[in-house]
Length: 210
Image (cartoon, rainbow, N blue to C red):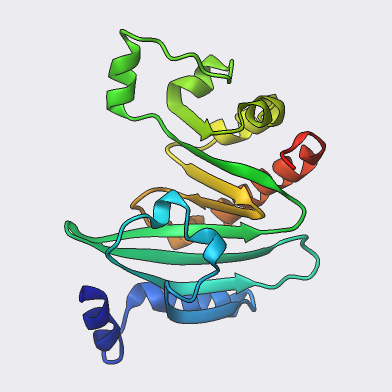
């Protein structure tokens, strides 16, 4: 219900965040949609962890980049989830490309409970980089793909960020900081980082999942 109230109020109120995203899109001559429902989105992204939950969902301030020189299409948007604890807002960078075909995976920051557990029971990670394992964890059913794909270059790239989450499946990548919106002055750098991750995965395609 809250999402429908929000839809109605959007017709009458000014939203500074939407204005900032619209201005950004206009400055770089990108596509822009003020708001969209989650239902009509591509079914292939609906299984990602960030979109789990049965409460209302909306995409707001959707920037699209149909740059023909890039081997991918991308969108940047604020994802709103109207949960019981209030609206959770997360800026998502979404990349889609036929240049990658990856198994379902998620890279996420290692939480405090997991760190505490590992003080007594050390998990055996397929990633051998101790620094990476201290800060992040990777989940995927295809452990061989993880071992072959996440080389030193890719791990170093991931370690250049703090508390970032990356989800992938087939031709899609999602990059975000859970329950956080990316400030406008950092948006370009975060988008460039997402493209670098895409480039690394595409470059390792010969070792990738089929």
